[in-house]
Length: 569
Image (cartoon, rainbow, N blue to C red; front, side, top):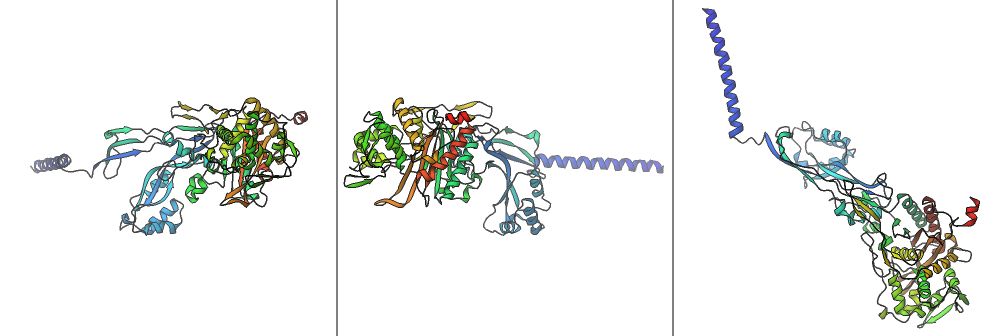
């Protein structure tokens, strides 16, 4: 009897437990279906960043000049630190994890006017896990970002440009091709578990993957670029100059092989420098070229058949009066046109300008690309200043031929000499070889483009021969000599234009030329602003030209054309 009662009690107890469990389950189901349970499940939307395309030099994907890396930016919300959390522990943990000074982190937490104080960027997932520990860390947040990296540091900085804090290309290639480089963002939408904020994978509603941006391949070679930048730094520092710029161009295609400006900057730390430092002086600095313009004047006179290389003209006693103003010259007496170019005679070139007349001189200047942009695929190119020839005063036709009274860019000057080297064909300069999509499709392929033919091929050949004399004994550019190669080029020393005349202390020193002279492969321009105490193009710029030209010729394996050098080999 007692056993029966005990059995009944057990059955009743079990039934009661089952009943309670069912009641609890029912209440839970009712809660889930009838009441607000947003704390358990939450909708979420996540924007996925599209990786920005890479930038390569002409050597292909082995040498990225710019690339983007996924990372997390950590920030501080001082108001979100929980009362039961140790602020000191949070500060110490954050400082250690991100390798920051503790004082800097403490200062961020002490701010009262912002709930979003940027701290640092990290690529390390373990840092994210550490700083996401809600049991002891609060007031610290993070967001997905793409960090633009420039593995070669300051190399090509003025060409590459940089990406600003909003992810927008703001200079150089980054700006010019921002739309092509920029990736397409993706999107995820679904639900997360409210407590642990883990995604409920089966409930994902939208899943659009991001698309990387296109890759840009340049015509520039980082090996040549480094030589250019090092040579510029050396010449600027040696002569206490304000700045310098240099360009190396393929004379047959117009492709830019290197383009440098010094001082430079690091694209990842662009905001540490002034906007003036970001400026690409090779195409944005407008300056009076001086005597490097004389080759254009001689080419124009030859093309008009006004003279030949052997025509003799009189430089007089070294002073030429015109329009009430004296023009001085270190060359005197009767000399040929070839000798006038070799010795850089002001008076002979001024007389050639008068023979050409203002109208024709202006036409040739514009034919060689001066006074207008050349259309290079970089932002910031300047037009230069030629002016309306109809408004030139009586003095101008004698000053423009020697590079005074007009202003040009280094890009225009090197492109004009490349035209002389290229049989009189003026090419459009360019720095982008191709653009490639993430799938490998070439969406843009550059093609060389002839934009003018200012002189006949035979005239170009004559000028090339005359320019060889500049770097030979007795010429103004002897220091531009490159062993194993004949060099054709020209020195230039131009005074800074100031109000009411010209400075007696500030100069532009330049040298521009190409090698090998009789079968040109590439052209190089070097210009230095305000060198001191030496200031002539032959003394300052010519040696820098020689360094760049020598290294470039060897790197490109251009065959030497000096017979003695070939015999020695």
